[in-house]
Length: 478
Ligand code: HEC
Ligand code: HEC
Image (cartoon, rainbow, N blue to C red):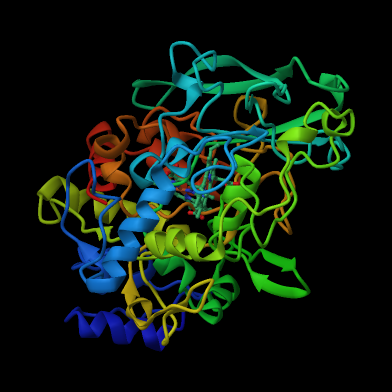
């Protein structure tokens, strides 16, 4: 971020600014907590703490916009069927039957990883996406990028997903214990060629919270690129970089997805790749070219018509972009304030950046609708939207998934925005974190940080029990 801009913002908040600059460009202000950050997303901030806190519209959504928001919400949540026409088009193979089946209440549906039945439920390995490649990075022709472990009547799912959990207990220097779990996935019952485990890389993802989707889409790419230039703190071992996506001849900055592999809201991709719902951007069935189709068993199930219109998708897009961002809670609580100081002192904010800005003009949706309200806002997403090497050491694997997305390598992940994270338990009934949900609480999520985040993680590790608790209380207030 541009320094003068930052000082301007800080002074506007009535704070005293430090200007002592270290050799590496880090200032004291980078490592200490500013106050007054409760309004997470400017005019889109809402004050809900209920289980619908992620799913409510911003205050500016009124009149016609509100009608379209409600319509988008419905299209997002309604279970699709395999019939032709409105609300249909599901499959033939799919991973989820509605957007909301995976992103319950615009959050993260409880991952099957931690369900009692572990994937043997009615909806298969529900709510997670399993990306597969050969060890040399090439996709399997018969399967594509994502395993569709569900299918409509008469069609064979692409495979069955299984997980084996490995547990290990560790100790903080003060003696308190914590346990980490590494989930190892395998796939059986492949519908076509069986792929040998030695030739398979699986990268598993749980859904992301939609909190602040509109603001993320309205981010100013220049500000993120400036942040990437600034994000180089050798004494912390941190250096973030941008992901870029080349699609339809255009090179754009990636901001969405766990590897910043999306430059846009991916509504069309969600319908196509996750649900088999064809649309103007992805007119082919996802299983097109698969052997089961060529053999004719699915022929009667494929239709020439697109399964969803651009108008419908624009309302889903509008719904996501117009969601309110829940305000922070308990900001003046003493423990929370102490936790906030520690968050800065431990260098968490060097990646989980507190303050960014949206483009002046806001956003234009798929079909041309303008959302000027998303423009010119000061926001507090707690992310730099950059890629960081998160290490491959812990339990012999770390967070490395060996999966390449654009410029992102296996060990690189986009800093997850933390706004709204404290309400995840209320909204979705669980505290599973990280890209594949392997962490069962905040402490485990932090202790999986390695690579560029090693020094920061060690600060947390070496804190007193009381301080670690305070830092977690701060995360709960986001
Ligand atoms: C099978 C489960 C599943 C279904 C169905 C699904 N998603 Fe997702 N979605 C995910 C997962 C998992 C991710 C994280 C993907 C990643 O990082 O690669 C994700 C990511 C996203 C993102 C990026 C979020 C961010 O913060 O950058 C958006 C937007 C999104 N989904 C919207 C949708 C919409 C709209 C639909 C319905 C049309 C949909 N999803 C259907 C599982 C699902
Ligand atoms: C080098 C950059 C970096 C630093 C420093 C860092 N993080 Fe992270 N953080 C990340 C990335 C990248 C992820 C996503 C990792 C994944 O999902 O595999 C993440 C994920 C998280 C998550 C899980 C979010 C979710 O919704 O799943 C939490 C919580 C978190 N960080 C808290 C912290 C705290 C607290 C600190 C300081 C002790 C910290 N982080 C330091 C980059 C960083």
